[in-house]
Image 1 (tube, protein in one colour):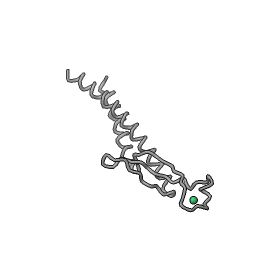
Image 2: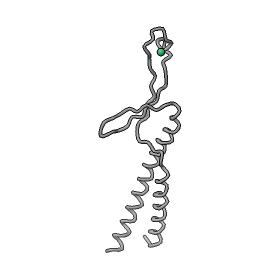
Image 3: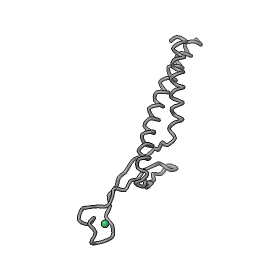
Image 4: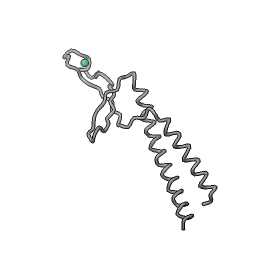
Length: 111
Ligand SMILES: [Zn+2]
């Protein structure tokens, strides 16, 4: 790997690090949609038309799973947040590759 190649890798890494800073709405969790039956005996939900969906994000909080209710008005924002988390994971994998390549190059230079 040439010095020029290392510069290209560092430039790619800088771009990915800058993109990380844009993922301000990220959410890490599992999306759950629920339909429910209420307490009214004469309600349509008792005849199969259940209420919902109600949305929840299942997250890890201090090592425990917690379900957080997400209001309908916030569903779109939550979807964006989950997409940003997927992008975060991709960026982490890409930076890992770049850093491994750069480490290989440094090991080569220092030999
Ligand atoms: Zn009902």
